[in-house]
Length: 156
Image (cartoon, rainbow, N blue to C red; front, side, top):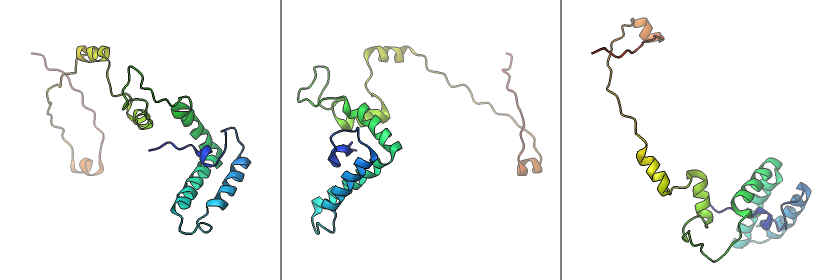
């Protein structure tokens, strides 16, 4: 999934715009890239779809706020650089895909401390199976019934 800059698609310079400015930008671009005006132009058709998607998100104030929060959290605060930091590889957290992946699955790498804690943590031991009999009538089985049972450990 690519996180698209809807403001750039609508040719707006900032996210500090009103709904009326969004509508105006949408209408101008929709006229310019509409498939009826650009018959057979696949690029114009794709651009028109992007413009519609951007308008659909930004024209609703609730979805615009959500989009702005996601943009600031994921993309907005980061500068693009060609340099790879010393403690990261090119396939790690610098890419938009990895940010999207980490958003849903978290950071999959464990530090040395986390591995030690995980190894020292005692895993629960599965207990033995317990079997018992509960007597019910045919009506209780058909209509359903709630019964309480208590399990006590037998003394040895």
